[in-house]
Image (cartoon, rainbow, N blue to C red):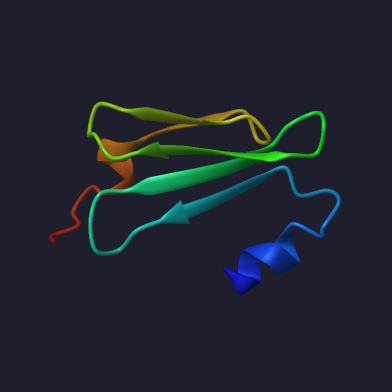
Length: 69
């Protein structure tokens, strides 16, 4: 909420990732070419999250490896 509103004011910020600690859920906010933020959400072990700002792929399974809910 409030923190993300402050982060959005950083001109160089292109992606913002939230990783849930209570269940398998990753939210990715990405700023598009027009300056609007879009949300994509994933929660399946087989999903791959691509972070274009750093050219990196993360699998949900790897992010939550060894995490017990």
